[in-house]
Length: 268
Image (cartoon, rainbow, N blue to C red; front, side, top):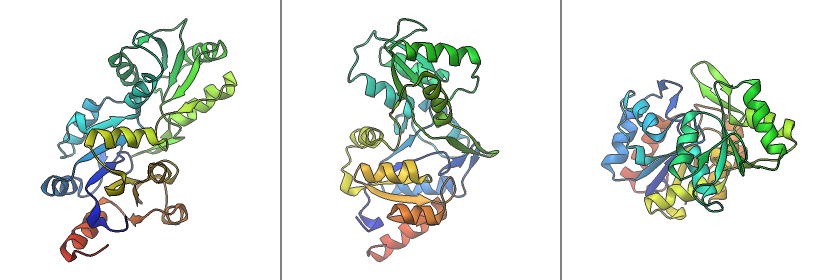
């Protein structure tokens, strides 16, 4: 697909695209008003597993964008759905991460535990301690399977780039000498789950993101159109080198181009 006019469903990253920490990107509300007016279904798909979908929806509401929790897929839930393919409800799982990650796993029937576990699921932890690291490493060395919500090394915020899940997962991997399986972007499962929820087809779906290594690479792996905005992790040269289908300074410029393409009825 080489035209914005052919997009019928949208998958949007959050951090670095819609907001930077607690700061909304310019024209955020206008962008979502456009999607609602055009009846374009969308899913917000984020590697950030520190908050639940309800908490992320509340955050966006404070920025003027009214989004349903059902329209948000976080990597913690994706990890839980991924594990349910291989493990039954009642499987003991250890969580290295925030409360939202544990909640997502419990909602899928997993039992959170600190010993005798089959899986260690790791994400970013804002209250990381040596004891938490030691416990996770011992479980991994004892044979537990290693699942990472995502491998992003950092997260954009109003303070700059902060340590992400990938940084903490790398620490656990080095200490345990165990290789993790990443579930979040750029793995196709995130996009597949989002498209399934919307009833979307790859050929008319586009992904909007700021990070080439996850959003653009992941979108291409899933066979969908990729749109890079330059308000987060990657610059124009990186986006061009990765072969992003469209590159815009921000979602406001994407909105303007989309409206213009629809008005002309020609490929953008």
